[in-house]
Image (cartoon, rainbow, N blue to C red; front, side):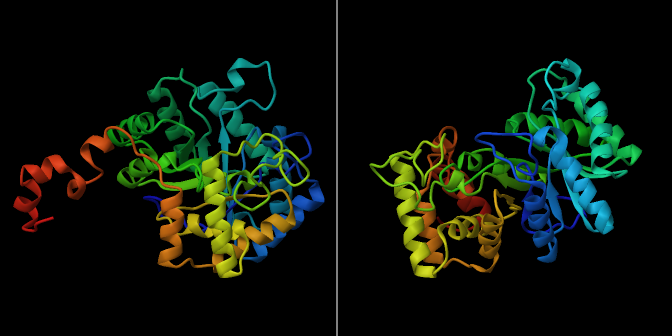
Length: 343
């Protein structure tokens, strides 16, 4: 994972739905269902688990801790959890990125997870308030104490992550090894700044929401009610989404695989990616896991890339994305000067 010696599975098991304390759009699973999916993931060779202090108001961590302890497999597992969001409302110093929230929540997470260390501890979401030095010093102290082995960051602007990483590097503090963010065929915004930042700073990229809320599985049809029996409330389809779904379904037919597997296989083909499977049933888990045996052809990858392509925007539209694509440097003959090659 990133610039570290940590070895993880290529697919992470997301456990946001493991619990019975959330209702509505985000969903929940019974304890029996969650444990069955957990066992199936372990049996398939997985070792990378993603949770957070706030997931199901702490119940996700509690269940994982119980299951891992019962099986005696703590040393085999890589547990990633997070702080920033509140487990309950009304306590201002239990939420946000502050040292106070960080230190209090790490102790509660350790207790719920029934462990003495956390493998990856994420800043969950940027709070627009805490000084960067406070965050990185606090995280370094946790790593020095042995309560946390590695640190990561999620849902934060790229320039802020670069600032935090630079502070840590200059002072010899623990550095982030990974970034977690939303990424799927229909939402490729992270390709503008986040993914290039990860490459330059040595961060592994851990995408969530990888099947796009089921937008590209065929359940949503043009001209039909998307919130109907075959749809999901809260999902808004655009014409672009329908067009992407058309290509995904066509490739699904070509490969004899499900549309979800096509979406996940596209994600797995991206470099430096460790996608999170966020599942709501054993059926979803088994379907998504099967994508590991699907290798899309160059033509299929191109069709998916083309139909879902985004405009990178300024300054990329002005400069290009590399020396080879910069019209300004090519006009000045700089590329040919240094590479002895004409473009």
